[in-house]
Length: 255
Length: 198
View (cartoon, chains in turn purple, cyan):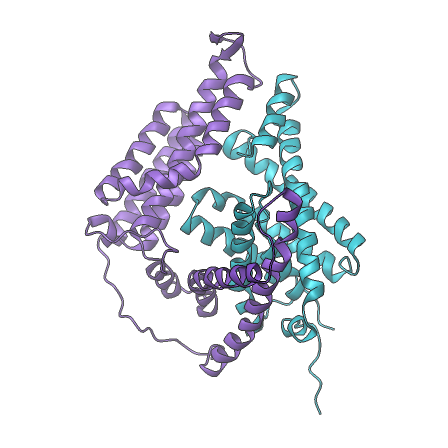
């Protein structure tokens, strides 16, 4: 049932790093690829991200995640390659279709950026349990009520999917058709979704009563069930990341 | 009446947020299961805005994209702002009475789609030079670029043809579901009314 997270449990140095440091890395890595518009520099950043993924022993798990964005990447390559407004230099022709150098150069750059964006998030997502990340944010001052909202989503969605299965079966047993033409499929949308929604809204009432009984709105400091994990190299890595980030930004605007 | 901008969220309104995200997820799941040519991935956000106002709607929108980014597709982080705006616009217009009948609900859908496209366009241009990853929209984008129209216009048209039909359908579905909800459910999240003391 617990398939709502991409976290992969492995024993690696990347897993031991503080979640907030990884969050900082993700942010810097993505921002840098959009500040720098030099192919080689972006490729270098992407290689850095890949190296971290390999060090975290999770490189093969990022490939399906990149695959989700495949359609976006494909349309970027096709559309920009053929139709970018700055098209001038003819690269080569495939039959009657001309392919331009400028468009392909830009398409290549954007593809690198998209792959880096997905991979940089992968560093965070694949090596960090959502609980640990929210826990780290709570210790930095995130409201515990809001922390609950973030984490409960991951529990509620599998429950709702299970409920949906039940309701689909029940409606089919009553003779509702879910296969056929577009209009027929469209009509079955409300009888399927309606009961699930009503049920989950009703559940929120019970859940909020249960939460309030247990002191959800209590003021004052909270305690933690799990003891504070000690992460390694937190501060050093944060300083290192910030120095690299500032250096690249300065280099970009000076040169 | 308190204003719709109250930031003091009741427990029920907070618990509504994960439920809304679950509904978004199911809408998307059903749309792909029934092979509908739309996303229909913001029913929950729209419903939450109708039930509990723009603030809850906007938070539900942002958290939705963050959680979806964490669990399936990191690209959705980019569109967190669009989701927030969808929640805001629906919440404000619903509060002003734009969900009183089906005609107004269609206008609300058009407005939400138009504004969502306007917010998405700069994001699409900054992050991927204007494409959206939707086949129909991108085909139009390519045709317009081929006729030497400006990039921003082509990208805006790309977003419009995808977002407007999708949001009209989403808002209509949410409206039908909202109208069918029993009164005690509708009143649960409403923190605008005063509690009557006996």
